[in-house]
Image 1 (cartoon, rainbow, N blue to C red):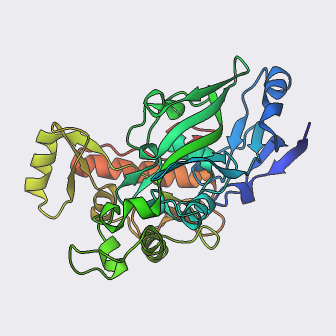
Image 2: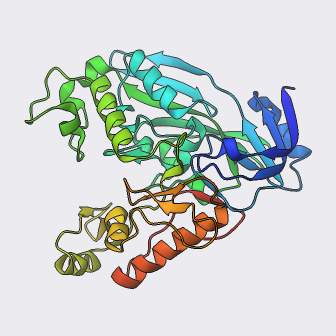
Length: 353
């Protein structure tokens, strides 16, 4: 078996916040077939924290056990005239998959370019950006059930995808995703008319001034998204962060209408049905004056990005506890001023929200 074990394993390089934490024992494997034996033996009494790219974690206290699945293969399983089924292992870097698919002539993932993390984490959070959610592109998810030692295959309906949510997120410690298959249109078949470029900023970044986008391709959308993300979001390699920290809150229509009347500049979007609306968490946080601020207590390195109000940052020596305290203070201010509850996107390790 291809298993490696490290005691008191440092996790600073394994979480994009750059929090200085450690795992009592880190187990790494490059073969998903090792999982049944691992969970029948050393993980039988205690569930490990599964590590991917660490871009969706806020570590307040390091775990006793951690597991990293290092499988990193991408391949095309089937191609028809206008569609391809692509399979990627859980350990594949997400952005690598996006760019690989474009190189093969496949479209569909371009709006999700440059999102940090791994393929295995993508369905859990149902990652989304610029008008696209990954659940729209998923063909199947292969996952290992920890308690039974059985591998399962789930279709999109069984995954129960919702806004930044899925069955895997709701049952956090039940399944471990080992691979994901994607149903992607070929770039030739989708054409310029099939590109999703109406989300704020994409047309401008592509230099499109009208509704006509002939001559543009999925690769052009990806490059525009990359430019947008780099202009708005701090680089985790430079300033520790986990991207957007809070989910956009969904509220009843009546509440949204009342808030909109009181705050005409507040962005309001249609949610999943006519009875609800989605609000901009970034606008709410900015309106409370948090953009660019730091938490006064502790190291002083836990703050909110000056570039985007949704992004909490570690300016150097912030602890997970300090970042959590900052997030709670922000949420409390938003609730006090607007009567709206905002919730974190990242998984909080070693504490409760």
